[in-house]
Image (cartoon, rainbow, N blue to C red; front, top):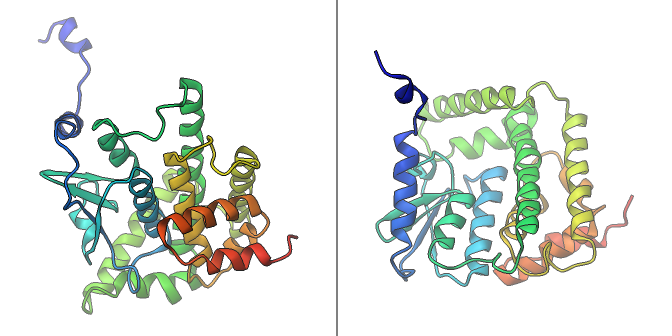
Amino acid sequence: MQDSDTLKKPIIPSKLITEKFTIELGAQEPWPNDVKLYQPYEVEQILLPDNANCLAVQAFLRMCQLHYDVEPRANAEDMSPTGKVPFIKCGAFVVSELEGIVQFVNNRGITLTDKLDNEAKSDMRAYMCLVHNVLEKAELYICWMDKETYNDVTSIRHGSVYPWPLNHIQNWSKRRSVMKNLKVWNWYDKTLEEVFQEVENACQALSDRLDDKEYFFGSHTELDALVFGHVYSMCTSCLRLNEFQNILKNFPRLLSHCKRISELMGKDTDPVEDLLKVPQN
């Protein structure tokens, strides 16, 4: 029988130990010139939530003035160590998702938040959680739960890189996984009206925090990159429903913020400018 001291020791998953070691070890090396950012194909494959997260990482790296090359892969999601896109290959290290990549970059002595105090950093993380917990969940809901959007857009794009009948199998598997997660997050039983109301509330909170500033905390932060990724993706999405655009046109501060970072990224600003020209409700 194990003694009481042994029983009280926390069990730390080996995956977490490995990831922490990888990030800390990566901090010892300079940023290479051959960093690759892996993501799905933009034109024919990528879906709204993945596009938002890929753009967020690209914007963050651009804000840090770190070089990278985008490498589209049909199976990017399967290649990712966490099963989510995007991920970067930096030397011998592979790191996925915005938060992991931010930490990896920070451990190299490169940060966008060095001038923020602890309270501001906590505030920033809270708003990043808001984006993940509302905007990203809403995007997943629309792509996979709304039947017309799923049939007309999601199933076609997600299955485009697989031959028949594998495309149907992959779509079924992914949809089942997303629905399972939506149930855990208490989003599965929401109506479309409730989903869009959640989005509008989140946009209002973000707009209020941004106020009349160019960036949320005076200068570039990862929050700016994350909000840009989602707002720009919503502005340019090919979804059957255009309710995301109808909501965003009522938040010119967020659209102006998105346009500002679009110019930094060298992205087409026309979709954002078009919404800025639409009269608010």
